Length: 194
Image (tube, rainbow, N blue to C red; front, side):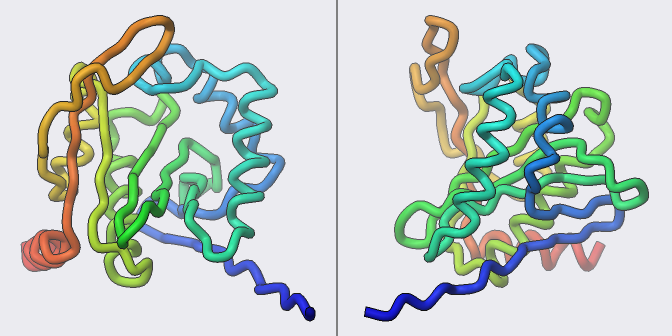
């Protein structure tokens, strides 16, 4: 049997202020800057990371990028002007054209619209080139900033998943948001005309 290796194609998304690119091994230190911050990971199901966990995350993302068919699209969020890595954003393919959205941003860059911009670019790609039909995301009920990112991108709150997240010996609820392909097309069309 002959094995044919499929070339890995890098996914790069650009916005006015950001470039979302594939992670490289040297990114682990920049990832660790935000992934080790207890305030950044406060409402997430993981973290704060030690150095080994940050290194493992970056290595795992790079490995998963090579899988065929690809199901993990995890990108480094970098500033267009300087190339500085300030966060991560990803979509994880589930079954039947559904994907889960996740994101994390260095605390020094909160409240500037960067993650809203990154998520918008990712949703555009997911529904125009990625073959997705539905994208969903979850956030802790107290994480109002994350909920705003989703709402600003046309995602609708579908409900509350009770005792859905377990961290540090405690269960917490999670709010569920989602957007469908046709809703994205309507939302993005309205935003282009404004």
